[in-house]
Image (cartoon, rainbow, N blue to C red; front, side, top):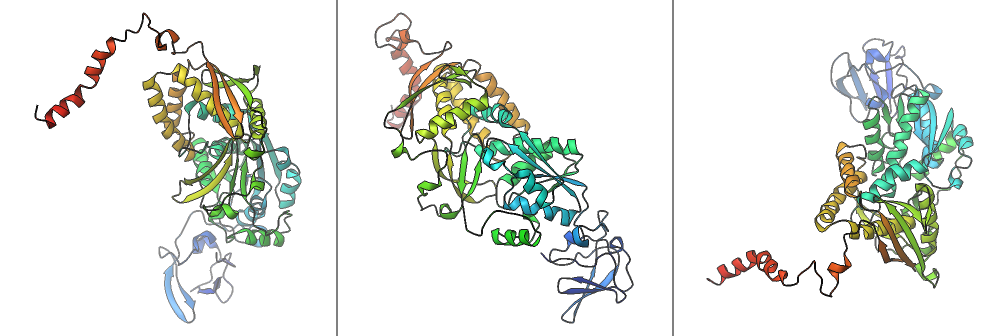
Length: 486
């Protein structure tokens, strides 16, 4: 990205430098307002509109152009006197302490002249990822670090509704990252209000889904906030550029240029992307996995677990009632020990491309199996079919970042109503990567042994089936009669 220099005023020779271009001003300009332009407008050719004419020369070729006047033009300077893209007062940055977000801190200060408040959400990614964050943030130039424990809210208000809805994206993906982004973005909006920030920022690339998930949440909860997405603006194109920028700005980043997996971890799952996974033909290396053992190395004896469910939501594990986050954490341990929940898939990203990801979701896989099995007792055929069809759309909305969309909220109300009778317990067997059901119980079960038994009973008269079959098969019979000329 070319940089605009000396925009505050032209020199006595009336020159304005822009990369290898030099602008000849017909008179001395004293402010950027007279130019009517900000640095962010210089991407490619000049905008021809409005106000003062000037000559733009390069290699003796003169181009006539006029700069557009914009009310947001500013004379403010950022770090080292650099002209700002736009003046912001305070920005809340989604901060992980990794390379990308560490270099975003000085970049925001340099380009927007703002204070940076780093925000980190604890969604169960592990204490090791939270250690030393305040030191890192302040060393990068942040004025403050805010950390919030969102684990219970994440599981209760985001994971469990998706679990109740049966939301699975493209047959496999249990939406681990998709559910985490809106809870983080929601907290960022809250923090922005608390600290008086006028903008929020994230480190998502312009190729991924997460940029959409963050920003749709920002729009839904506070449309007045400005949003800064550095990966869509800056000159940094990859890891090596980021390391070079960090070194130049004295940002301590404990990384090397060696290629590694891109991972996202929370209490629900761990995702892996990049490195050898970018070729769908490559088998993942076993040492990549972190939440689950290789199924062949899992215990030789199966383990039975009993999940208690009330109105479509899990509440207990082996008879012990636990909070949502504690329940999931315990099932992650048990499931991981047995190699449960590994998924390798090629998915269609929202932005149009395909990507390959490997996911570990041990506890989530167990819970999905339990809820689905209990519904087989408590929901009738038509209800299950409608619920399953809506679950596909529900998953698409969550994947696309539309958590706070009225459509998803309305569908969630339906899911809540339709699963009011889904209470009971399910017993599952965990063995070398597999989850199989061994028992289901519910006080609201629609299964009647006296009806389903092959023994004769009073409620179901087998002779009634003849008339039902004749009526049910009538359309097929009529078509066959037509074809045979009967």
